[in-house]
Image 1 (cartoon, rainbow, N blue to C red):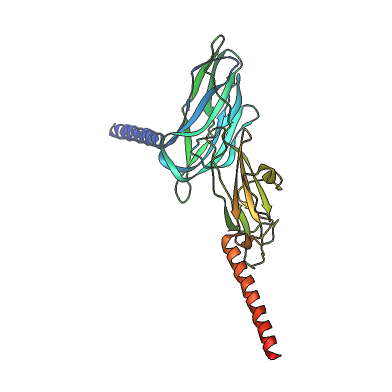
Image 2: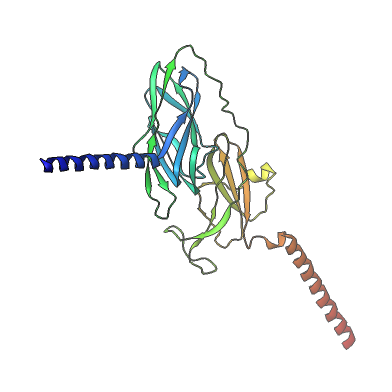
Length: 315
């Protein structure tokens, strides 16, 4: 009898401990929530913000949203996102999921962190629910990047006839924010020789990341040129040999004798161009280069003049 009572107590305590630990783990997990109208009219888009709450700092996120039947994703904006570097920008896959993953340098902790915004449209009457797929993860801002499951606060709304939705301005005429591309040496790949003119291991690349507060960054382009182009002259910048690129972009000119131009383009076609003046590119175009050129010219004239004077004296 005493043995049965003891076993019952042990089982009860064990159950309480398991439940308690589960509650703690659930409370400590990162949570994704949705903000938007709960009732929407058919046939016009509404904005739904995808938000993150993280009690512990995270530095990366991989998210998959399940899009229910009857809902169509019109557009996605990652403007104002806490994710600074997208590995895979949020996009629709197969018409029923939105997939995205990215890095948050320095980490994020807190509530109401904007991941991205969905512009959706209901095409039939009835209720529908947005939710995070169980395969989604956040990664803690630690050395080993421990995975932390994302908990979803599902978002249920109703599509109804005869209801007007608040108008949404999907226009974007603003260029991406100014950014600073930088040169960096990275380990060589199979497609590029690791030897450069300096004999150092690795290859030169340009790294970059830009932000666009409205529609979000769509893609980047890179051009290498020996000319120092005026960035305000669109005729000259359009004439550059632009190539679609991702960061880091391995330079074709490993001798660093070219200017490197990086263009950030948002989803509405607006763009911002920045230039990296490499260490050896066109030194004579810089103010110090002009001074050195003039001094060298004067030195040559002086040497010629002295030689002529000596020749005259010898006669």
